[in-house]
Image (cartoon, rainbow, N blue to C red; front, side, top):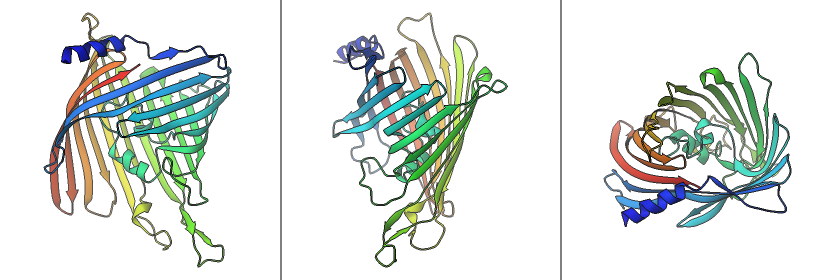
Length: 354
């Protein structure tokens, strides 16, 4: 059974990343897919189930180039318990340095969210990203953004993206009149493969208020900011090293009543990954072997003695560019008012992009 599974996986890995389909309504039309399946043994003492197989993510992506400057994208996530729309957007690129996009898509703010799940060297996105997504600072949303890049300046590439969004969770019904504003900027130095980025997000919460003359009240501005660094270094055609790190903080508006004129508590978090890769070009059937060490930290309220962190060690083998086997351990630590809880999860995963 295992041999058959591996044979099918290797066969699928020979398929190109995307299938170019003939469509008389588009100059170019591509269909892509992805699957990540895993087996995990959870270390938490009362976890039920304590071990399981699962489909971590799977889906289909459709991309159509309607004209030379106009494109459309559709992405659907497919899981055993649900099917939902991830992206549905149009983009217009009148020149190579400017692009406008409208629809539902992931806001480009923190680095922890911008890196694709395939390029992310750990099993899950950073704790601070997931928490900020619950606060609607990051994640997918409906709106529009405008990205731009400036002419090269002394060997540096400067680009930015500004957006205006509903500020709601995916598929949530709007309950206020407020909008979310986001901005991200990056400076890249290609000669040394170094990129420095920063982001800012600002929005407000509103609700009906029968006691006010307007019948509506809003909170003060709630903000989140982040800064990140990415670095890659190629020692030779056989060895390379990459590192990513980010720090983020913001207003934790879920933990306060915005009708009361008080400042909300702050959350903060940071994470870093270091990956060493070996490319054995003379070994058939193995394209890359990598080892990743990562640290991840989050505190939901900087004034309270409560925090979470994760330490991950993950090994990966790539038989081809679009097929990956990963295995590793994740040490989880929870500190709450002087009491510590520690446990380790072990995860094995197979991923395919086709």
